[in-house]
Image (cartoon, rainbow, N blue to C red; front, side, top):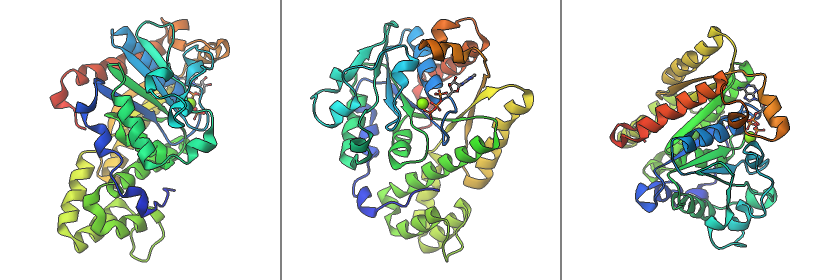
Length: 330
Ligand SMILES: Nc1ncnc2c1ncn2[C@@H]1O[C@H](COP(=O)(O)OP(=O)(O)OP(=O)(O)O)[C@@H](O)[C@H]1O
Ligand SMILES: [Mg+2]
């Protein structure tokens, strides 16, 4: 269930100031999320980072799994001395001090925070500082590997990215969690916009699920918002139109599995009014575990596999879209 937010948390819009492209040289940030643990977020983040680096793009992969950082391992890097914790706690003054080369040309990694307790207390201003620092990295692309669940940090980093991908397996539990993740992002996006402040109580009620107003679905929320303030209703529509989460279906074995992506897309349209972009699917590959055991990137160990082909295809599609920025919905 989506968290209830303390209103004070939103005294500033945490995302707006940090997402302005003018702030740095980074062309795009891609975030790999998904409600459930173990669905392949880190595999996809590391593989897409490698794929992009092979398109001669300078890439920094950032581990934002604040409770269980292991992106460095999927990239074949030993636990680095400096991690995000050091930057957050001001033990190192510059984010660049946390950027570790992976040995793969054009690709570096920022290892995840090691002291999860400290990180749990990340304040809004910390998040803004982090996002500003990420935008200013010496990189063309930044890839976020997000943690499982729908914590406010995870959703904020997802929403702050230019391209937010939801990873899902063709399994009921994973699909359920993917909806929960999209729902959390949906409400948090509305809640973080100061223009929605006059109807904040309605959004909070919707997030809580149980309420006396009969708000159960996003369309119930829209009805109530519109009744209180047609202006806010219009703004709500605009905010939703600006949301385009991407969907990646992982560990696919059959055509029926592939079709799950289309079902999720149509449910999201009907239920949230959100246009999900179903980017494609990734095959289940029984050799992934071998790469994991060897602590080597799958992309490097099995370069001729179909799974690598799937990853390259999606990455190339996004890369091409990014090269024509006017067509990219943000
Ligand atoms: N396409 C695939 N084919 C086969 N195995 C896969 C595939 N994708 C992921 N896996 C396996 O699933 C496991 C979980 O993957 P990964 O660690 O990338 O998930 P995660 O979503 O990042 O998990 P967490 O939420 O714990 O961070 C890995 O051990 C990997 O072997
Ligand atoms: Mg992971």
